[in-house]
Length: 45
Image 1 (cartoon, rainbow, N blue to C red):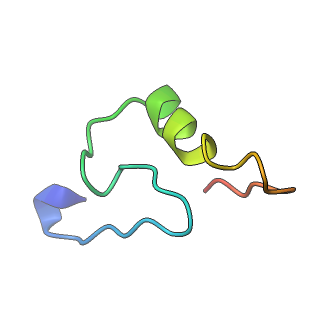
Image 2 (image 1 turned 60 degrees about the horizontal axis):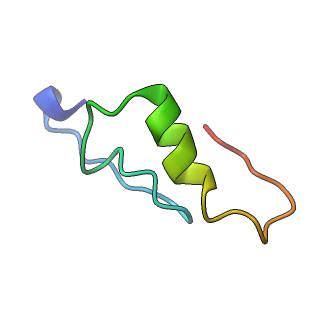
């Protein structure tokens, strides 16, 4: 996406994928869910 000049925006929880497109899926998951303890549902796209 970055090589085609697409802009990436993170919503609600910070996953850092907009900052570093080379993060592993497991690191993205950990970053996206670490602040979710007070939430009852997680929708991760």
